[in-house]
Amino acid sequence: MTLNDLKNPELKKWLQEWIDLCTPDAVHICDGSQEEYDKLCNMMVKSGTFIKHDKPRNSYNCRSDISDVARVEGRTFICSRREADAGPTNNWCNPKEMRTTLKGLFKGCMQGRTLYVIPFSMGPVDSPIAKYGIELTDSPYVVVNMAIMTRVATEVLKRIDKGTEFVRCVHSVGAPLAPGQADVPWPCAPMDKKYITHFPETREIISFGSGYGGNALLGKKCFALRIASVQARDEGWMAEHMLILKLTNPKGESKFIAAAFPSACGKTNLAMMRPSLKGWKVEVIGDDIAWMQFDKNGQLRAINPEAGFFGVAPGTSMKSNPNAMLTCNRGNAIFTNTAITMDGGVYWEGMDKVPEEAVDWQRRPWKPDMKDADGKAIKAAHPNARFTVPARQCPVIAKEWEDPAGVPISAFLFGGRRASVVPLVNEALDWEHGVFLGATMASETTAAAVGGVGLLRFDPFAMLPFCGYHMGDYFGHWLKIGKVNGAKLPKIYYVNWFRKTPEGEWLWPGFGENSRVLKWIFERVDGKAEARTTAIGNLPTDDALDLKGLGISEEHKQMLLECDKEGWLKVIPEMKAHFAKFGNRLPKTLVRQLEALEARLNA
Ligand code: TSX
Ligand code: MN
Image (cartoon, rainbow, N blue to C red; front, side, top):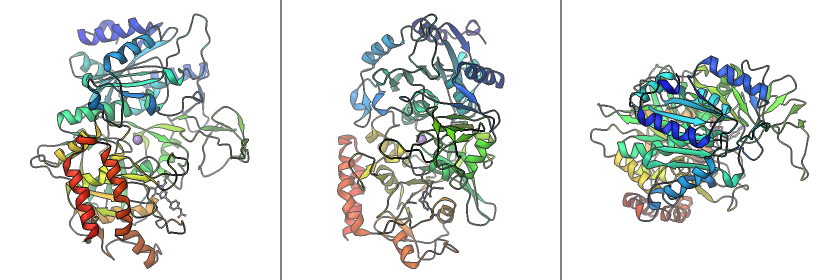
C-alpha cells in the first residue's frame, strides 16, 4: 500500500501533517511481512545497529546509547486539559503548551531518515476487545520490535482507512542527519529533550528523543495501559498491568487467572511457570497486560493485547524461567543491551553458564572477575537488558491465547515483595476488600531505593506509572466494575512469595512451588478448599494448603500463614499516608475499608 491508496481524509491529513513537519527523506508504509522484517534487520546489520547472532537462529543483538536504557518517568507526561485529571502521581502539562514544545522539536527531526508508518492491532485483529493504532517512527529498531510485540498488518491499515477508530502514535529518536552526516548505531536525544507524552482526550501519543522499550514501542505501556486505561474508564472495561495464565488441574479442568505485581516480583516467571505439583499445568496467555470486558453472560473475558514478550533478561535462566529461555532459544529474538559471547551467542547475568569471556553491552571486552573502580563487579549485560520474542513460540503458550473472545477470568492476584507481615496467600473478603488490597499493593524498598531499607513503596494495582488519569478515579473505576449488573466477579487474592525468617532466610521456595498456592486458589474458586476468616482476609486452614514433600517446619508454616495483627497495625499509618496522596478523589469506600481493617485488627 502507498499513501496514494488511502481514501480516509482524516487519516491522510494526519499523516501529511506529520510528514510535512518531520521532513523525512522517505516514507515507508509497513505491511508486517517477514520479508520486510528481514530486510530491515539486514539493513541494521549493515549500518552497525544490529549484530546477527550465530545462535539462537535468526536473532539479533542491539546495544543502545548508554544514556537511553530504560523508561524515563520524569520525562513522561499526561497532557489532559485539566491538571486534576492527570492526578498527583503523573507529570502533567497543558496540552496546548506541550503541542507547541513538540512542534518545535519535531520540525525537521527526521531529516536524513525514513518515516515508517506502522499500522498495528493490539489484540487479535478480529477480537471485539482489540484496538488499532498507527505508529509513525524514524526508528527501524522500533519497526522490528513492534512487528514482534503487536500485530502489524495491511489489513489493519485498510480497516482504519475505512473509518475504524485508531490511536495516533508518533515517535522520533530526535536525531536528524545533516546531508553527509554519518549515523550512529543508536541515535537519540539528550535527556532534557526526551518527551513521552499522552493526550488522553484525543487518544494520542507523541514520543520524542528515546529509542528504548516503553518510550518508543508505543503499543505497549503508552497505548495498552496509559491511553487504554482512559478508554476503559470511559467505555466500562478494564486495561490492566496483568499477566494472564491458564491453570489446569490433574482432572483436566482449567481456570484462567490474571495477576498484577510491582516490578521485580517475577511476573513473567509466574506467567510461564513449571508447576512442581504433579498433574498440574500452567500455560501462558500473556505476561504483562490484560484487556478485559464482561460478555453477555456477565463473564469477564481477557485478551493479551500483545503478540510478544519484552522481558527483562538478567535473572532469566533455566532455573528461574525455563520456558522464557526456551522461547528465546527458538530464535527470531532481538536482544537489547545483553552481552555477546565469543562464539556469537548471548549472555546476561543470572544465566546458567557464565562464559570465560564476552563483549559487554557497552561493546567492551568482559571477563567474569572484572571490577570497577569501587571494586564492584562489572556487569556484562545492563540490568534492564531485554529480549523481544514472539509469544507464539513459547513452549507453554495456551491454545486460547489468540481467542478473539478472550478467556474467562476466575481470579485476580495481587502481590508485592514483603519480608514480613504479609502472609503467603490471603483471599479478599469481598470485591470492595479486594479493591482495597489492590490499592494498597506495596513492596519493601531495598538499599538502592530512596528512603532507605524496609519502608513501603506503594504501587497500587502495579499501575502507578501506567494509569493515564487520576489514580483516585481509577480506584473508583474498579469499585464501579464491582457493581456491574449481572457481573460474575473474579475472586481476589493477595500473594507474597518473599517472606523471610527474622534471620533473613527465604521462608518460601517460590518459583514452581507457587503452584501449591495456585492449587488452593483454584479449589477456593470451586468452593472446595478450606479457609479461616481473619482480620485481614481468608487464610488457608492448617491443612488446606498442599505442602507435601516440601519439608517446611510447622513453625515456618505458621509464619507463612499467620495473621500478624501487631505487624499489620504498624503498617496502617503508612497506608493512611499513601491514601492521603489522592485527596478528595479517593473513594470513601476505600477510607471505610482501611478503618474497618484497623477496627478488626484492634478487636
Ligand atoms: O520470580 C520469582 N518468583 C515467581 C516465580 C514463579 N522470583 C524471582 C524474583 C525476581 C524477579 C522469586 N524469588 C520467587 C518467586 O516465587 N521467590 C524468590 C525468593 C527466593 C529466591 C531463591 C530461592 C528461594 C526463594 N532459592 C532457594 O530456596 C534455593
Ligand atoms: Mn510491565
